[in-house]
Image 1 (cartoon, rainbow, N blue to C red):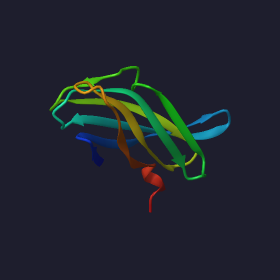
Image 2 (image 1 turned 60 degrees about the horizontal axis):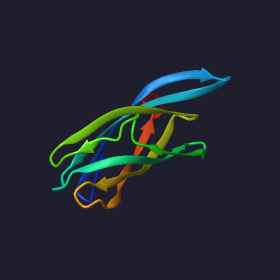
Image 3 (image 1 turned 135 degrees about the horizontal axis):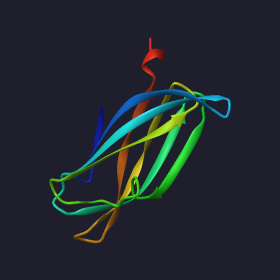
Image 4 (image 1 turned 180 degrees about the vertical axis):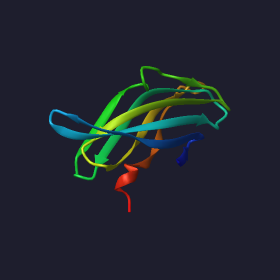
Length: 128
């Protein structure tokens, strides 16, 4: 698990390898990840957008941006957390993801970014 705190918001990421399959005659490596967003600040915050960079071992780079996370824009009160799971497909058995969440402090109306720490994606059978 990797963790990082930015402006009182703690991001924790856990990953798992889901398996392989063929899509359009190409092998795909499926990975799942669980993100926990914990509000350690004194103010309520709302996550309104996500921005991801996804890399694989073949030098493929994909960026993904959009509203909320899995269709939600959670409000997280002080001392509370929001956890969700999602996944991605890679063309290789190794990769990484990182990015940031765009948030707003609901007490001050100030917008800010929270770093999503870089986490590795790796198929266990491909490790030495």
